[in-house]
Length: 431
Ligand SMILES: Cc1cc2nc3c(=O)[nH]c(=O)nc-3n(C[C@H](O)[C@H](O)[C@H](O)COP(=O)(O)OP(=O)(O)OC[C@H]3O[C@@H](n4cnc5c(N)ncnc54)[C@H](O)[C@@H]3O)c2cc1C
Image (cartoon, rainbow, N blue to C red; front, side, top):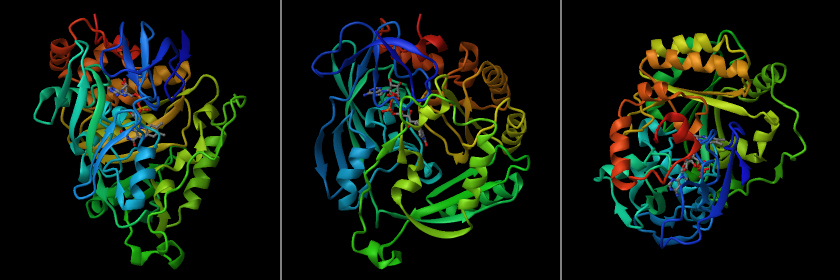
Protein backbone atom coordinates (compact mmCIF):
# COMPACT_ATOMS: atom_id res chain seq x y z
CA UNK A 1 0.00 0.00 0.00
CA UNK A 2 1.32 3.37 -1.01
CA UNK A 3 0.34 6.87 0.09
CA UNK A 4 -1.25 8.48 -2.93
CA UNK A 5 -2.90 11.81 -3.86
CA UNK A 6 -4.06 13.78 -6.86
CA UNK A 7 -2.40 16.99 -8.02
CA UNK A 8 -3.76 19.03 -5.08
CA UNK A 9 -2.10 16.60 -2.60
CA UNK A 10 -5.42 16.53 -0.78
CA UNK A 11 -7.21 14.23 0.09
CA UNK A 12 -4.72 11.45 0.82
CA UNK A 13 -5.41 7.79 0.00
CA UNK A 14 -3.55 4.51 0.41
CA UNK A 15 -3.65 2.12 -2.47
CA UNK A 16 -1.66 -0.58 -4.23
CA UNK A 17 -0.49 0.87 -7.52
CA UNK A 18 -0.17 -1.71 -10.29
CA UNK A 19 1.02 -1.00 -13.82
CA UNK A 20 -1.49 -2.08 -16.48
CA UNK A 21 0.77 -4.54 -18.25
CA UNK A 22 -1.82 -6.62 -20.04
CA UNK A 23 -4.73 -5.31 -22.05
CA UNK A 24 -5.95 -8.82 -22.77
CA UNK A 25 -7.91 -9.19 -19.56
CA UNK A 26 -9.43 -6.96 -16.92
CA UNK A 27 -7.13 -6.70 -13.88
CA UNK A 28 -8.02 -8.60 -10.72
CA UNK A 29 -9.88 -7.04 -7.81
CA UNK A 30 -11.52 -3.64 -7.58
CA UNK A 31 -9.84 -0.39 -8.56
CA UNK A 32 -9.56 2.59 -10.87
CA UNK A 33 -7.27 3.52 -13.76
CA UNK A 34 -4.83 6.39 -13.23
CA UNK A 35 -3.08 8.40 -15.92
CA UNK A 36 -0.66 11.13 -14.90
CA UNK A 37 -2.54 12.01 -11.70
CA UNK A 38 -3.31 15.60 -12.78
CA UNK A 39 -6.87 15.49 -11.50
CA UNK A 40 -6.80 17.51 -8.30
CA UNK A 41 -8.75 15.43 -5.79
CA UNK A 42 -9.44 11.73 -5.28
CA UNK A 43 -10.65 10.61 -8.73
CA UNK A 44 -7.50 8.76 -9.74
CA UNK A 45 -6.94 6.32 -6.88
CA UNK A 46 -8.79 3.66 -4.95
CA UNK A 47 -8.03 3.13 -1.25
CA UNK A 48 -10.30 0.08 -1.12
CA UNK A 49 -8.37 -1.66 -3.85
CA UNK A 50 -5.95 -1.09 -6.72
CA UNK A 51 -4.87 1.92 -8.67
CA UNK A 52 -4.11 0.78 -12.23
CA UNK A 53 -1.32 2.88 -13.68
CA UNK A 54 -1.83 3.30 -17.44
CA UNK A 55 1.73 4.44 -18.22
CA UNK A 56 2.65 1.14 -19.99
CA UNK A 57 -0.03 1.97 -22.60
CA UNK A 58 2.25 4.48 -24.26
CA UNK A 59 2.35 3.71 -27.99
CA UNK A 60 1.20 5.59 -31.04
CA UNK A 61 -0.61 3.01 -33.18
CA UNK A 62 -1.62 4.57 -36.49
CA UNK A 63 -1.46 8.03 -38.03
CA UNK A 64 -3.18 9.37 -41.12
CA UNK A 65 -1.52 12.62 -42.25
CA UNK A 66 -4.31 13.26 -44.77
CA UNK A 67 -7.10 13.40 -42.20
CA UNK A 68 -5.14 14.04 -38.97
CA UNK A 69 -6.62 10.94 -37.35
CA UNK A 70 -4.30 9.60 -34.67
CA UNK A 71 -4.89 6.24 -33.00
CA UNK A 72 -2.93 5.93 -29.77
CA UNK A 73 -2.94 4.04 -26.50
CA UNK A 74 -4.64 5.71 -23.59
CA UNK A 75 -1.48 6.26 -21.50
CA UNK A 76 0.10 8.50 -24.18
CA UNK A 77 0.41 12.07 -22.89
CA UNK A 78 -0.55 15.26 -24.71
CA UNK A 79 3.09 16.24 -24.27
CA UNK A 80 4.13 13.20 -26.35
CA UNK A 81 1.48 14.00 -28.98
CA UNK A 82 2.73 17.58 -29.30
CA UNK A 83 6.40 16.56 -29.45
CA UNK A 84 5.65 14.04 -32.18
CA UNK A 85 3.07 15.85 -34.35
CA UNK A 86 3.56 19.59 -33.95
CA UNK A 87 6.73 19.47 -36.12
CA UNK A 88 4.39 18.21 -38.91
CA UNK A 89 1.91 21.05 -38.29
CA UNK A 90 -0.67 19.24 -36.12
CA UNK A 91 -1.87 20.04 -32.60
CA UNK A 92 -4.41 18.45 -30.19
CA UNK A 93 -7.86 20.00 -30.76
CA UNK A 94 -8.36 20.65 -27.03
CA UNK A 95 -5.66 21.12 -24.40
CA UNK A 96 -5.99 21.86 -20.68
CA UNK A 97 -3.63 24.09 -18.66
CA UNK A 98 -0.99 21.34 -18.54
CA UNK A 99 0.30 19.02 -21.26
CA UNK A 100 1.06 16.31 -18.68
CA UNK A 101 -2.27 14.54 -18.97
CA UNK A 102 -2.92 11.25 -20.73
CA UNK A 103 -5.38 10.75 -23.57
CA UNK A 104 -7.35 8.34 -21.33
CA UNK A 105 -7.45 10.90 -18.50
CA UNK A 106 -8.45 13.67 -20.92
CA UNK A 107 -11.32 11.53 -22.20
CA UNK A 108 -12.45 10.30 -18.75
CA UNK A 109 -12.73 13.93 -17.53
CA UNK A 110 -13.86 15.16 -20.96
CA UNK A 111 -11.56 18.13 -20.51
CA UNK A 112 -12.16 21.60 -21.91
CA UNK A 113 -9.64 24.15 -23.09
CA UNK A 114 -9.47 27.85 -23.79
CA UNK A 115 -11.37 27.11 -27.04
CA UNK A 116 -14.44 25.41 -25.57
CA UNK A 117 -16.75 28.18 -26.84
CA UNK A 118 -15.83 27.29 -30.45
CA UNK A 119 -14.36 23.76 -30.39
CA UNK A 120 -16.26 21.98 -27.64
CA UNK A 121 -14.64 19.46 -25.30
CA UNK A 122 -12.05 16.70 -25.84
CA UNK A 123 -14.56 13.90 -26.54
CA UNK A 124 -16.11 15.93 -29.37
CA UNK A 125 -12.90 15.21 -31.32
CA UNK A 126 -12.70 11.50 -30.58
CA UNK A 127 -13.92 9.19 -33.35
CA UNK A 128 -13.94 6.05 -31.18
CA UNK A 129 -12.55 4.47 -28.03
CA UNK A 130 -11.72 0.88 -27.12
CA UNK A 131 -13.10 0.28 -23.63
CA UNK A 132 -12.02 -2.71 -21.53
CA UNK A 133 -14.99 -3.82 -19.42
CA UNK A 134 -14.89 -5.81 -16.16
CA UNK A 135 -16.32 -8.80 -18.09
CA UNK A 136 -13.08 -8.84 -20.10
CA UNK A 137 -14.84 -7.71 -23.26
CA UNK A 138 -13.20 -4.91 -25.24
CA UNK A 139 -15.92 -2.76 -26.78
CA UNK A 140 -15.30 -0.28 -29.58
CA UNK A 141 -17.57 2.72 -28.98
CA UNK A 142 -18.31 5.70 -31.16
CA UNK A 143 -20.33 8.83 -30.31
CA UNK A 144 -23.59 7.12 -31.31
CA UNK A 145 -23.30 4.89 -28.23
CA UNK A 146 -24.60 6.13 -24.82
CA UNK A 147 -21.68 4.29 -23.15
CA UNK A 148 -19.27 6.53 -25.09
CA UNK A 149 -20.86 9.60 -23.44
CA UNK A 150 -21.09 7.98 -20.02
CA UNK A 151 -17.35 7.29 -20.26
CA UNK A 152 -16.56 10.85 -21.40
CA UNK A 153 -16.63 12.62 -18.05
CA UNK A 154 -17.32 9.28 -16.32
CA UNK A 155 -14.12 9.52 -14.27
CA UNK A 156 -12.90 6.00 -15.09
CA UNK A 157 -15.97 4.35 -13.56
CA UNK A 158 -17.35 2.64 -16.70
CA UNK A 159 -14.23 0.80 -17.92
CA UNK A 160 -10.59 1.24 -18.83
CA UNK A 161 -9.99 3.19 -22.04
CA UNK A 162 -7.26 1.25 -23.85
CA UNK A 163 -6.99 3.14 -27.14
CA UNK A 164 -8.70 6.00 -28.85
CA UNK A 165 -8.85 7.73 -32.21
CA UNK A 166 -8.33 11.48 -31.90
CA UNK A 167 -8.70 14.01 -34.70
CA UNK A 168 -5.75 16.39 -34.50
CA UNK A 169 -6.07 19.93 -35.78
CA UNK A 170 -3.91 21.55 -38.48
CA UNK A 171 -2.15 24.68 -37.24
CA UNK A 172 -0.20 27.29 -39.24
CA UNK A 173 2.66 27.51 -36.70
CA UNK A 174 3.67 26.68 -33.14
CA UNK A 175 3.10 30.29 -32.07
CA UNK A 176 0.14 32.19 -30.71
CA UNK A 177 -0.93 35.72 -31.51
CA UNK A 178 -2.41 36.83 -28.20
CA UNK A 179 -4.34 40.04 -27.68
CA UNK A 180 -4.18 41.19 -24.05
CA UNK A 181 -6.70 43.46 -22.36
CA UNK A 182 -6.20 44.68 -18.80
CA UNK A 183 -9.66 45.66 -17.53
CA UNK A 184 -9.69 47.78 -14.38
CA UNK A 185 -12.66 46.07 -12.77
CA UNK A 186 -14.94 43.06 -12.81
CA UNK A 187 -17.68 44.62 -15.00
CA UNK A 188 -15.19 45.70 -17.66
CA UNK A 189 -13.60 42.26 -17.61
CA UNK A 190 -16.90 40.46 -18.22
CA UNK A 191 -17.90 42.78 -21.03
CA UNK A 192 -14.55 42.33 -22.84
CA UNK A 193 -14.96 38.55 -22.65
CA UNK A 194 -18.59 38.70 -23.82
CA UNK A 195 -17.94 41.08 -26.69
CA UNK A 196 -14.69 39.63 -27.98
CA UNK A 197 -14.63 35.88 -27.35
CA UNK A 198 -16.48 34.82 -30.52
CA UNK A 199 -13.81 36.50 -32.66
CA UNK A 200 -11.02 34.36 -31.17
CA UNK A 201 -10.57 30.60 -30.87
CA UNK A 202 -8.94 30.99 -27.45
CA UNK A 203 -10.51 33.22 -24.81
CA UNK A 204 -9.85 33.23 -21.08
CA UNK A 205 -9.48 35.74 -18.25
CA UNK A 206 -7.39 35.82 -15.12
CA UNK A 207 -9.09 37.65 -12.25
CA UNK A 208 -7.26 39.22 -9.33
CA UNK A 209 -8.80 37.62 -6.25
CA UNK A 210 -6.70 39.88 -4.02
CA UNK A 211 -8.29 43.02 -5.47
CA UNK A 212 -11.76 44.16 -4.35
CA UNK A 213 -12.61 45.62 -7.77
CA UNK A 214 -11.83 42.33 -9.47
CA UNK A 215 -9.48 43.73 -12.07
CA UNK A 216 -7.81 41.22 -14.34
CA UNK A 217 -6.21 40.24 -17.62
CA UNK A 218 -8.12 38.94 -20.65
CA UNK A 219 -6.27 36.75 -23.17
CA UNK A 220 -7.71 36.42 -26.69
CA UNK A 221 -5.59 34.16 -28.86
CA UNK A 222 -5.22 32.34 -32.16
CA UNK A 223 -2.44 30.37 -33.86
CA UNK A 224 -0.21 32.82 -35.75
CA UNK A 225 0.46 32.61 -39.50
CA UNK A 226 4.11 32.07 -40.45
CA UNK A 227 4.29 35.51 -42.15
CA UNK A 228 3.46 37.18 -38.84
CA UNK A 229 6.48 35.66 -37.08
CA UNK A 230 9.85 37.38 -36.66
CA UNK A 231 12.47 36.06 -39.16
CA UNK A 232 14.26 33.90 -36.58
CA UNK A 233 11.01 32.07 -35.74
CA UNK A 234 10.04 31.75 -39.40
CA UNK A 235 13.03 29.43 -39.89
CA UNK A 236 11.45 26.89 -37.49
CA UNK A 237 7.73 27.66 -37.44
CA UNK A 238 6.85 24.35 -35.75
CA UNK A 239 9.51 24.30 -33.06
CA UNK A 240 8.51 22.24 -30.01
CA UNK A 241 9.67 23.11 -26.53
CA UNK A 242 10.98 20.67 -23.95
CA UNK A 243 9.26 20.99 -20.57
CA UNK A 244 10.28 20.50 -16.98
CA UNK A 245 13.86 21.70 -16.96
CA UNK A 246 13.73 22.39 -13.25
CA UNK A 247 11.44 21.16 -10.53
CA UNK A 248 10.48 22.15 -7.01
CA UNK A 249 12.56 19.99 -4.63
CA UNK A 250 10.72 17.59 -2.33
CA UNK A 251 12.25 19.20 0.76
CA UNK A 252 10.52 22.51 0.02
CA UNK A 253 7.59 21.87 2.31
CA UNK A 254 6.85 25.40 3.53
CA UNK A 255 3.69 26.78 1.94
CA UNK A 256 5.00 29.34 -0.53
CA UNK A 257 1.59 30.66 -1.51
CA UNK A 258 -0.35 32.46 1.19
CA UNK A 259 -2.00 35.64 2.37
CA UNK A 260 1.21 37.63 1.89
CA UNK A 261 2.49 36.11 -1.33
CA UNK A 262 -0.83 35.97 -3.27
CA UNK A 263 -1.19 39.79 -3.62
CA UNK A 264 2.45 40.09 -4.64
CA UNK A 265 2.28 37.34 -7.28
CA UNK A 266 -1.02 38.81 -8.57
CA UNK A 267 0.51 42.27 -8.92
CA UNK A 268 3.52 40.95 -10.80
CA UNK A 269 1.31 38.84 -13.09
CA UNK A 270 -0.85 41.83 -14.01
CA UNK A 271 2.11 44.14 -14.55
CA UNK A 272 3.83 41.61 -16.81
CA UNK A 273 0.78 41.42 -19.08
CA UNK A 274 0.76 44.78 -20.78
CA UNK A 275 -2.17 45.44 -23.14
CA UNK A 276 -1.75 44.83 -26.87
CA UNK A 277 -0.97 41.96 -29.23
CA UNK A 278 1.98 39.67 -28.47
CA UNK A 279 3.42 36.65 -30.22
CA UNK A 280 4.53 33.80 -28.03
CA UNK A 281 5.34 30.08 -28.32
CA UNK A 282 2.50 27.62 -27.66
CA UNK A 283 3.93 26.23 -24.39
CA UNK A 284 4.00 29.38 -22.22
CA UNK A 285 0.61 30.29 -23.69
CA UNK A 286 -1.26 27.05 -23.03
CA UNK A 287 0.86 25.53 -20.25
CA UNK A 288 2.45 28.38 -18.27
CA UNK A 289 2.78 26.32 -15.08
CA UNK A 290 4.51 23.37 -16.78
CA UNK A 291 7.75 25.39 -16.78
CA UNK A 292 8.24 24.40 -13.13
CA UNK A 293 7.99 20.67 -12.44
CA UNK A 294 5.93 19.63 -9.38
CA UNK A 295 4.91 23.20 -8.60
CA UNK A 296 2.09 21.73 -6.49
CA UNK A 297 4.70 21.16 -3.75
CA UNK A 298 4.88 24.91 -3.21
CA UNK A 299 1.56 24.72 -1.36
CA UNK A 300 3.24 22.69 1.37
CA UNK A 301 2.44 19.27 2.79
CA UNK A 302 -1.26 19.97 3.45
CA UNK A 303 -1.83 20.65 -0.21
CA UNK A 304 -4.48 22.76 -1.88
CA UNK A 305 -7.85 22.46 -3.55
CA UNK A 306 -9.05 23.79 -6.84
CA UNK A 307 -12.69 24.82 -6.78
CA UNK A 308 -14.14 24.98 -10.29
CA UNK A 309 -17.81 25.61 -10.91
CA UNK A 310 -20.04 26.50 -13.83
CA UNK A 311 -23.22 28.58 -13.53
CA UNK A 312 -25.62 29.40 -16.37
CA UNK A 313 -26.26 33.08 -15.66
CA UNK A 314 -24.02 36.10 -15.26
CA UNK A 315 -26.05 37.21 -12.21
CA UNK A 316 -25.27 33.84 -10.59
CA UNK A 317 -21.58 34.22 -11.38
CA UNK A 318 -21.59 37.64 -9.78
CA UNK A 319 -23.22 36.36 -6.59
CA UNK A 320 -20.68 33.54 -6.29
CA UNK A 321 -17.79 35.91 -7.02
CA UNK A 322 -18.96 38.36 -4.33
CA UNK A 323 -19.04 35.50 -1.83
CA UNK A 324 -15.62 34.29 -2.99
CA UNK A 325 -14.18 37.63 -2.01
CA UNK A 326 -14.96 36.72 1.59
CA UNK A 327 -12.94 33.49 1.37
CA UNK A 328 -10.70 32.76 4.36
CA UNK A 329 -7.65 32.76 2.03
CA UNK A 330 -6.44 34.69 -1.01
CA UNK A 331 -5.62 33.07 -4.33
CA UNK A 332 -3.28 34.17 -7.09
CA UNK A 333 -4.79 31.70 -9.55
CA UNK A 334 -8.37 32.50 -10.51
CA UNK A 335 -9.40 31.77 -14.07
CA UNK A 336 -12.69 32.66 -15.73
CA UNK A 337 -14.08 31.56 -19.06
CA UNK A 338 -17.32 30.83 -20.87
CA UNK A 339 -18.32 27.22 -21.30
CA UNK A 340 -20.61 25.73 -23.94
CA UNK A 341 -22.96 22.76 -23.58
CA UNK A 342 -21.52 19.26 -23.20
CA UNK A 343 -22.96 15.77 -23.62
CA UNK A 344 -23.09 12.91 -21.12
CA UNK A 345 -24.78 12.20 -17.79
CA UNK A 346 -21.75 13.43 -15.79
CA UNK A 347 -20.83 16.27 -18.15
CA UNK A 348 -19.46 19.42 -16.57
CA UNK A 349 -21.66 21.42 -18.84
CA UNK A 350 -22.64 24.94 -19.78
CA UNK A 351 -23.73 27.05 -21.43
CA UNK A 352 -22.53 29.41 -18.79
CA UNK A 353 -19.55 30.83 -16.94
CA UNK A 354 -16.88 28.70 -15.36
CA UNK A 355 -14.45 29.94 -12.73
CA UNK A 356 -11.56 27.99 -11.18
CA UNK A 357 -9.73 29.12 -8.05
CA UNK A 358 -6.84 27.53 -6.11
CA UNK A 359 -7.03 27.75 -2.30
CA UNK A 360 -5.04 26.11 0.50
CA UNK A 361 -6.40 22.88 1.99
CA UNK A 362 -7.44 24.11 5.45
CA UNK A 363 -10.54 23.40 7.54
CA UNK A 364 -11.65 27.03 7.21
CA UNK A 365 -11.41 26.83 3.40
CA UNK A 366 -13.33 23.52 3.35
CA UNK A 367 -16.18 24.97 5.46
CA UNK A 368 -16.29 28.03 3.22
CA UNK A 369 -16.27 26.05 -0.05
CA UNK A 370 -18.95 23.61 1.10
CA UNK A 371 -21.33 26.45 1.77
CA UNK A 372 -20.25 28.16 -1.46
CA UNK A 373 -21.18 24.93 -3.26
CA UNK A 374 -24.74 25.33 -1.98
CA UNK A 375 -24.83 28.79 -3.52
CA UNK A 376 -23.51 27.42 -6.85
CA UNK A 377 -26.24 24.76 -6.77
CA UNK A 378 -28.91 27.33 -5.96
CA UNK A 379 -27.75 29.20 -9.07
CA UNK A 380 -28.32 26.04 -11.15
CA UNK A 381 -24.60 25.27 -11.42
CA UNK A 382 -22.28 22.33 -10.91
CA UNK A 383 -18.79 21.53 -9.65
CA UNK A 384 -16.12 20.00 -11.95
CA UNK A 385 -15.51 16.44 -10.70
CA UNK A 386 -11.91 16.23 -11.93
CA UNK A 387 -11.04 19.18 -9.67
CA UNK A 388 -13.30 18.28 -6.77
CA UNK A 389 -12.23 17.17 -3.28
CA UNK A 390 -15.19 18.20 -1.15
CA UNK A 391 -18.63 17.43 -2.62
CA UNK A 392 -21.12 15.54 -0.41
CA UNK A 393 -23.42 12.91 -2.01
CA UNK A 394 -26.48 15.18 -1.71
CA UNK A 395 -24.63 18.06 -3.33
CA UNK A 396 -23.36 15.77 -6.08
CA UNK A 397 -26.89 14.52 -6.86
CA UNK A 398 -28.23 18.05 -6.97
CA UNK A 399 -25.40 19.13 -9.28
CA UNK A 400 -25.66 16.12 -11.58
CA UNK A 401 -29.37 15.27 -11.88
CA UNK A 402 -28.59 12.55 -14.45
CA UNK A 403 -26.57 10.57 -11.89
CA UNK A 404 -29.16 7.75 -11.92
CA UNK A 405 -28.90 7.43 -15.70
CA UNK A 406 -25.13 7.21 -15.24
CA UNK A 407 -25.48 4.45 -12.63
CA UNK A 408 -27.85 2.52 -14.90
CA UNK A 409 -25.30 2.55 -17.71
CA UNK A 410 -22.53 1.66 -15.28
CA UNK A 411 -24.58 -1.26 -13.88
CA UNK A 412 -25.01 -2.63 -17.41
CA UNK A 413 -21.23 -3.01 -17.82
CA UNK A 414 -19.96 -3.11 -14.23
CA UNK A 415 -22.71 -4.80 -12.17
CA UNK A 416 -20.36 -5.66 -9.28
CA UNK A 417 -18.83 -2.16 -9.03
CA UNK A 418 -15.30 -3.35 -9.75
CA UNK A 419 -14.48 0.14 -10.96
CA UNK A 420 -14.41 2.37 -7.95
CA UNK A 421 -12.33 5.24 -6.63
CA UNK A 422 -12.13 7.37 -3.50
CA UNK A 423 -14.19 9.89 -5.49
CA UNK A 424 -16.98 7.38 -6.27
CA UNK A 425 -17.03 6.33 -2.62
CA UNK A 426 -17.25 9.93 -1.40
CA UNK A 427 -20.02 10.83 -3.87
CA UNK A 428 -22.08 7.74 -3.07
CA UNK A 429 -21.66 6.34 -6.59
CA UNK A 430 -21.29 2.81 -5.23
CA UNK A 431 -23.08 0.68 -2.64
C1 LIG B 1 -2.14 22.64 -14.01
C2 LIG B 1 -3.41 21.97 -14.44
C3 LIG B 1 -4.25 22.60 -15.33
C4 LIG B 1 -5.44 21.98 -15.74
N1 LIG B 1 -6.23 22.64 -16.63
C5 LIG B 1 -7.39 22.08 -17.03
C6 LIG B 1 -8.22 22.72 -17.99
O1 LIG B 1 -7.92 23.81 -18.46
N2 LIG B 1 -9.36 22.10 -18.39
C7 LIG B 1 -9.72 20.87 -17.89
O2 LIG B 1 -10.76 20.35 -18.30
N3 LIG B 1 -8.94 20.22 -17.00
C8 LIG B 1 -7.79 20.80 -16.56
N4 LIG B 1 -6.99 20.14 -15.66
C9 LIG B 1 -7.41 18.82 -15.17
C10 LIG B 1 -6.89 17.68 -16.04
O3 LIG B 1 -6.94 18.00 -17.41
C11 LIG B 1 -7.74 16.43 -15.83
O4 LIG B 1 -7.81 16.12 -14.46
C12 LIG B 1 -7.25 15.19 -16.58
O5 LIG B 1 -8.22 14.19 -16.47
C13 LIG B 1 -5.93 14.67 -16.02
O6 LIG B 1 -5.45 13.61 -16.82
P1 LIG B 1 -4.54 12.47 -16.19
O7 LIG B 1 -4.00 11.64 -17.27
O8 LIG B 1 -3.56 13.08 -15.25
O9 LIG B 1 -5.65 11.65 -15.41
P2 LIG B 1 -5.73 11.23 -13.86
O10 LIG B 1 -5.70 12.46 -13.02
O11 LIG B 1 -4.73 10.20 -13.56
O12 LIG B 1 -7.20 10.63 -13.84
C14 LIG B 1 -8.32 11.45 -14.04
C15 LIG B 1 -9.55 10.59 -14.24
O13 LIG B 1 -9.42 9.87 -15.46
C16 LIG B 1 -9.58 8.48 -15.23
N5 LIG B 1 -8.72 7.78 -16.19
C17 LIG B 1 -7.41 7.98 -16.41
N6 LIG B 1 -6.98 7.16 -17.39
C18 LIG B 1 -8.04 6.43 -17.78
C19 LIG B 1 -8.23 5.39 -18.73
N7 LIG B 1 -7.23 4.93 -19.51
N8 LIG B 1 -9.46 4.85 -18.84
C20 LIG B 1 -10.51 5.30 -18.09
N9 LIG B 1 -10.38 6.27 -17.18
C21 LIG B 1 -9.16 6.83 -17.02
C22 LIG B 1 -9.17 8.28 -13.79
O14 LIG B 1 -9.76 7.11 -13.25
C23 LIG B 1 -9.71 9.53 -13.14
O15 LIG B 1 -11.05 9.39 -12.80
C24 LIG B 1 -5.79 20.71 -15.23
C25 LIG B 1 -4.94 20.06 -14.33
C26 LIG B 1 -3.76 20.68 -13.93
C27 LIG B 1 -2.85 19.98 -12.95
